[in-house]
Image 1 (tube, rainbow, N blue to C red):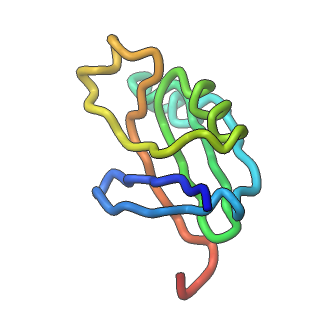
Image 2 (cartoon, helix red, strand yellow):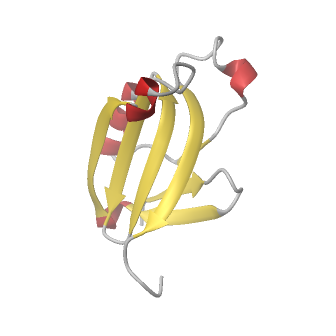
Length: 101
């Protein structure tokens, strides 16, 4: 079974099954209105039991890989890599949508 390994900012690791993948949504980060230094993009990845939010830049590459079920893992990269990477993940959070998970 294909899974996405999500390593959250608190370093917890979650295996989420692509069989439960519902959709993803890539948009500009609403935090930019209040914080000019905030990551420019927000990618929400929705599974049946959890919602993963990725903040960063160049996230279209990650979104495409998710749509094809080809992304193996996602985790935050240090800020000093932001200028050298085409895709930079600044933050990853996981919120479970179902109780008792």
